[in-house]
Each structure stands twice: as C-alpha cells, then as structure tokens.
Image (cartoon, rainbow, N blue to C red):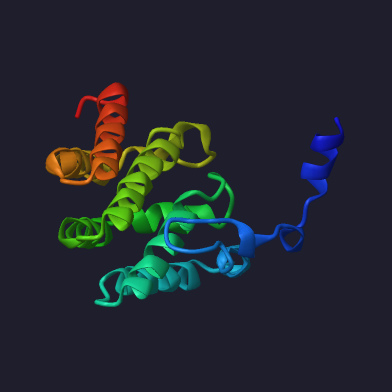
Length: 186
C-alpha cells in the first residue's frame, strides 16, 4: 500500500530522469516532452508539434532523428480518450502523415531507431485503432478506411524488416506482425 501511495503522489520532478537509460542516452529530456504534450490544448498546436517531429525524423543528424521519434512515440503512448489525444489519433490516421512516416521508417538505417519506429506503429495500432471502441465519440474514427490501410501498410512494413540483419529489429517486426495477425484480418 505504501508503494501505491507513493506512485499516486509522484511528481515529474521527483523522478531522476537523468539517471534513467533510454536507447541512446539518458531520459533527461522526457520532462520537456511531457510538458509540451500536456500543455497542448489546441489541435493546430498538436498537429504542428507532430509535423515538426516528423521533420526531425527526416534529418541527417542522428540526434534530431532520435528527438523526432521520441516525441512521436511519447505522443502515441499518451492515455487514449483524453482531449489531447484526439488530435494525435487523427494526425496519425491521416494518409499523408502515415505514408511519410512509413517512408521514413523504410529509409532508416539505425537499428535502435528502427526498433523504436516498429514499436511506435504497434502501440498506435493497439491503443488508437484497436481500442478506439472504448473511447467516447469514436464512431467516425472507427469507420475511417485509413485505419485499415494503416494496418495493411504496417503489416507490409513488418514483413520488410523480418529479414533485417539486426536481431532487435527482427524481434520488433515479429512482434508487430504477431499483433496485427492476432487482432485483424490483415
């Protein structure tokens, strides 16, 4: 019970982010990512931040690509059904955005980033598409044909990386494909 109380009262500033490891470095910037995401109240600001993250993911600089993917991943992991997640969900489901994202993933060479991208795709499918029925006012979103197209492209993407030289990328691709095959007719 003491742990539950601690967890419920935990503040972002209480976490030693600079000591938590991530794929490339420490999680020092996570509080900034959370703050940006938490402070977004207007759809256009959220879309602009996601567009910026997508641009960063296209950079030649590995640090910028890492920053872009982390922001996109954090956005995809937000609690579904909150007011800030509707624009995120809608942004990811736009054909122009996910097509660009899939192009970026296909051209990525870094195995750690590929793993993160494949994880992001799986999480988006799981949380936003397949669990959409549990979120209020999602009937229109559920009926969008782009959701099925997203999952079909995600399946093709997963199949592409099944033969990657890096074991962690193959594992992420297998996990994505297993989830997609388990939950849909893709």
